[in-house]
Image (cartoon, rainbow over all chains, first blue to last red; front, top):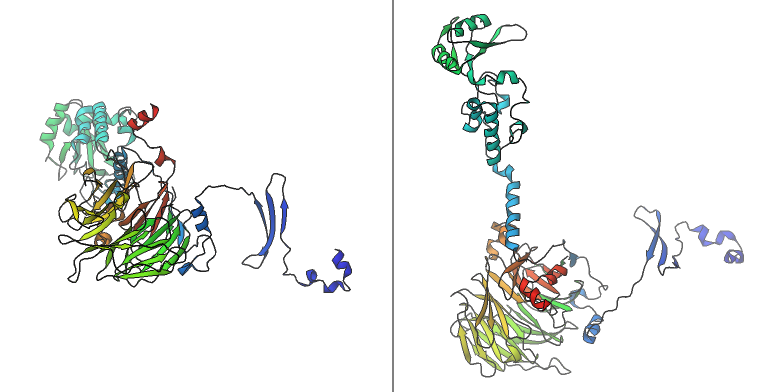
Length: 291
Length: 336
């Protein structure tokens, strides 16, 4: 500040006059051998920025052929003439890191790698597949099918249908096997190791699946008692279920009849299919497990 | 390893070459410019301007004083490596496809194309390293004419004793360096599958050929015996023998005209590493968008560079796994 004292007028002092002046760069040497450089600059928005850099200098000594060392001092020429030393950004860049480790079974590893992207492109594989309903073969998901509640799937694959004949445990095993072989989705309760059908909702209806008939085209005015009378002729009926509309309490048009004995059910199916009841012709078939 | 990408060329690379100390890398391409690069950091030292046509080939003298290039403008030019000046131009009747300095640097061979009624030749030029580099002989000291099948590539054997040439028909021949007489001719590759590259081992006792027939062969310089075969699944443009580790590097990819119709994955634009002795493929390095036209390895075996049809040169400095890889038998040998 002695400078300031020498001046005749403090207003002449440049530091006060020029707000755009930047303080000089300060370099301090630290105890640990590093240097701290504090410099100021203006950023793109015209704001003053203080930049503090801590620099550690290490000397790397490399022994090279004297000819190589001499070449290091060569000036640039041709298109590079007059350019500053150091790689320029328009000609030199650094690429992505490549992991290269030589190995004898390189091919096998590469093959595995090649397989994986194929699996990943499942979307491409399914690109031109159409959605097909398993109940009515329409172009919608099975879950959206209007006949979802009334009809069983038309061409159920054997593995899935195995549940109807083989009972809960066997059915689960068959479905589990299915899940293991193909890549299709298997719900958790059907997977191998899952506890059969034990945890299923509406389990009480499942028990007598094998002797249950599904009756469709039932009149709206049908009564459970009438149906029981009709079917009891063939054997002991354990359950009659007539689907009804929740609000109107009218029959929805289909019913399930469970027999105690499967042979009775088979006979009933044979005889009652096509039977005229309340001006409608009944269609009777074995019920299929809802999927 | 992180490759250094050198984007100094606008067209396909035709040849790249490290100098004998490995600190400089020279690259030539079809865009008429020769570039010199520092191999350590990829900085461009300069360019050598003057050719009027695509440059097919480059070689640097063993003392890194002179640089020779051969071009489609029917000339071989000699450059002062340090200053970038052209010191000598030799005119030929046809394009020059390959130049190579003899191991002592005193001679330069140039392979000329067969075209316009001229037969393919291998011309040998005497090189003078006096104070005035421009003082060079005008006429070749030896001219070998290939009457049967034109030579596509050529090089010098150990001590410059033979000139070894690869031919368009897939054969390799051995010429006496003094008389130019053909001593041997071996059909090393499938007939009519051109040999695209010949590169020698450091002691020049054997060399590797890369051919269109999708294989590379290791051949003895003395009697042209085929020592090893490295099969690939794509036509090969270049092959090199790595010092320090016993590997070979092959570069190729399907023909440039088919590139746009195949994906990069199928295009096989990879540098393939084979074990030189066991002939097993031990790895590949990806990166280029087009076929690899040329590969060269650092004379110390610490780095390699590849130049592609895509106009890029990629310099790879090997890291530890490359040097650590060993066969079980090699390890046992080491323990003893």
